[in-house]
Amino acid sequence: MLEKVKVTGITFYQGKIDDNNIDSGSVFIEEYLDESTGRSKGTATQKYPLGNADSAKALMHNTFPLICEVEFRRVTNGNVSKNTVHSIKPVAMAQQAKQ
Image (tube, rainbow, N blue to C red; front, side):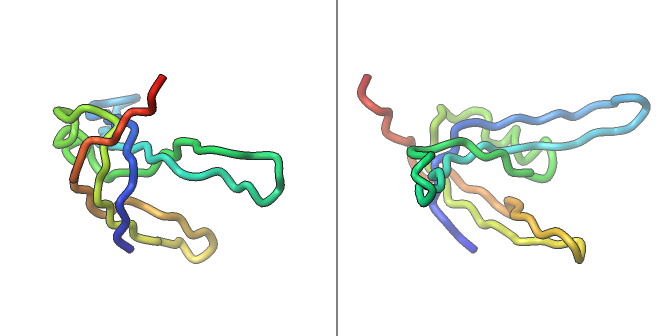
């Protein structure tokens, strides 16, 4: 599924923890809160796995927030489903809200 989304940040780690090699990246995407209950309004940021650190490092030179074209992939282990980021491509800088 391909979407244009507002990316608010990127994190990564590449190294060893307790003798385990870790190579991971994450992207933070702005999403609307569920207003149907009447107890929420506005937006929040959701963390999605990005794969490896190199995928995150490729985006680090950008100024955030950023509008990106993201391809989400829904995966399952047979019991639980989740969305992951399969690919991400910057398309424009996000407009800042006026203070």
